[in-house]
Length: 450
Figure 1: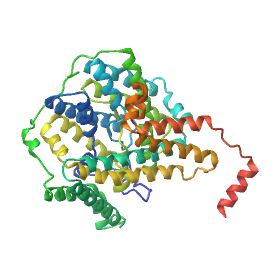
Figure 2: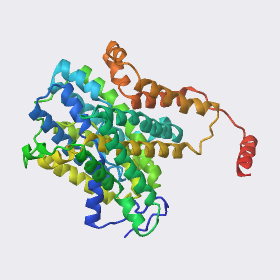
Figure 3: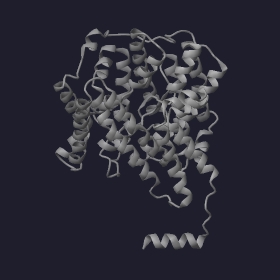
Figure 4: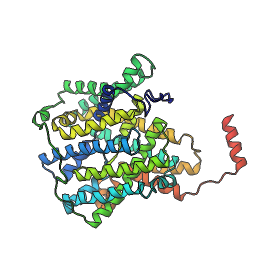
């Protein structure tokens, strides 16, 4: 067994071994807390897929997420990073599919995915790009932006879910409350505290689902109709079509996704006290690219590191890669056995989103941890504050404006994370850094020490 983690916030370190049963249980907890089927459902609706193809599309996204998670965790970044469908390219994929067809959708995904992988190896430039464009100030702000930009989606999903709004709010509140109570009980280092911390998400899901059943909001009939086995095939929606404009659009979208997922890597690095050195960053880029490439082959969507799962690590204190590898295997199994994946999709949306809201808080707070040691002078205050302002402005942007702008701008403005991430990178580059002489720096350090 590897040496136990010295991080007081972790009960299990990244390389610590845990039992098979425990890893499966914790891996399932990660899978249950993910809303990875939401993005595919939205994309399927925008692409006008029929019911059968929508079910198959969701299944392939489960499979792609599992394979991408295994690639990233075992051979890529080698940290507890769970991959899932990104929300960033939804608008772009819908526009490409509506104009050029499904073949062009999946044809546009392949070149960008390979480019992301090549940036890591053999070019080995990705780590240099991160060092130049994403220092801790930028990375921490991106993490905060990710947390803030995801919060409204949790509330919108609660309000817009089928059923009575009041009932949905109660269901979400019960789920969130049980999670918070388990987190607080989990502060006990020994005895029942460990149990509540490790099982916090599963207990919250159970409590929320039971509450939802009382209101009649649980329907497992799709499980009965789902098939037991369904095996994947290459390009199930037709041969890929390589359209230059679609490819260039998706290359740009991939770069935005890369900024998003780099923010997740910063979250995981902060939570687990793991250094993101150049070798690890380049491997992460390869893992990201290969995961997206495999997803496009099987009819899935671009994958990204899920910040929500990084938040779960912070909540449970379990950072073992074995748990995440188990989550990857479970996702692959769910992709091959539709009846099981149907069980996951039957968990009422308010239950997942109530938990997701608390996870967003954990993400944002971990972003603040990254930037807490940065000197918040006037320059850095603008670099941090303006992107957060623009993120919120994007989230409340009227739909009429989105429909009136060119497609390329629509792709960006559809994602608050994308707008905020791009803004913080640009502002950090264009706003001059304040020069502090050595004597002044020593004086400031002494004042802080006193």
